[in-house]
Amino acid sequence: MIKTFKEEISSLFAAIKTLSFKETFIFMSVAVITFLSMHYASPNFFRKVFDTSDDKFYSALYWFSADGFLMFVLPIILIPLVLKGKPADYGFRIGDYKFGLKSTALFVGVMLPFLWIASGNESFARTYPQGGPFVRENISVLLYYELFVGFYMFAWEFFWRGYMMFGLKQRFGYYAIFIQMIPFFILHRGKPDIETFSSIFAGLILGVQAWRSNSFIYCFLVHWSVMIFIDVISVLRYKSQSYGIGIDAFLKLFTN
Image (spheres, rainbow, N blue to C red):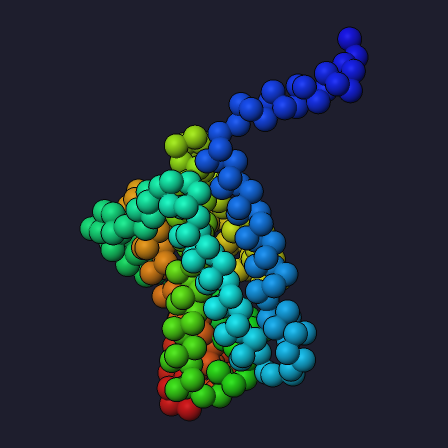
């Protein structure tokens, strides 16, 4: 039996009424914030608006600051104002710090050798730091540049492993880990191939870590530590022009 247009509309509104406000709002707000991030918090937007040809430094700082606002400050406002909850309900807590710190040390320790091998590829190493030549040429600038990276990573982890995953946890259970992994992976598009592919498993592993520790903070520690290592090792490789992965390449980083 073919439904009339009126019956189709009635069925649609009946289905909409069955949706939970909390989960629906989280899905919609994540989509809107991601849209704003992609179009108005990007380095390209900064260069277009300010008509600048900077070497990526100021556009990167804008990107980290704008995304930090969108992915951390906005959700922190929305949680009590719209969702009537507390940030702690969304992973903004210390949680199980013993597991959190142990797993952080384990994950970083396991990842460093792989990052060392990946950085041996010159094209990979030249991608970082994302602040461009100005950061690469000035070690003192690199230090406070990493603070901006830290703010960005804190917001990024809160948005996916906090706001989204913990927000969907009650309704979807463990599937929330997979749900947050998908956009996390997609937004790595444009990065080096090995990093993009690895983000699938990184998203799952960090999701499990946040779930088990009941906090996104340890995911932030892992992610920020990894980014600091990538940036620093890339700068050292650039300055020493050493792109091998053996012990001689490692020693050359410091002797040069």
